[in-house]
Image (cartoon, rainbow over all chains, first blue to last red):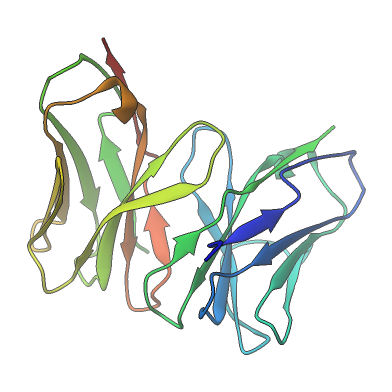
Length: 111
Length: 111
């Protein structure tokens, strides 16, 4: 079992661009959650997907959107990038509301 | 809104010491509490998960306790080793099952 995987590992973008991050959940998991972790901070919840629908959302603007596919994998899209979007983006998967397992993260740098 | 505080923010100790990391939370109506380890720039590794009905969990040299009434949890690390150097994060999940994270305790164990 490969666990939760994320791609890419690192990404550099410029302000105003758009970015897509990808996550494959652990085998047997059907729920994917996304988190943003700024340097020196704890992860902040962005949103959660279950049955291809956004089930819960944290305090993030509409520039942050997502998608879940029938195979339970998920994408996080961020439009109109700002310098403040630079962070480690973490994906976590779970079997519905059970324990979440985290991936290695994608480091996004916005210049 | 749940708030999670971790004390101390940073800790530097010689190898072999027994350590206590503290986590406090404001809303005692929790579903579970989890301790994670994070190495620099990496994802989260789950160390211990304590369900709301439990008082403590143990894994090897690690022991975590939970006192819901006082809104506190402690992570005890016995006989610390240089390999324990990392950031330790506390996360509290409530009725939404989405964890709220503290900012972490950065631990350095020097030989």
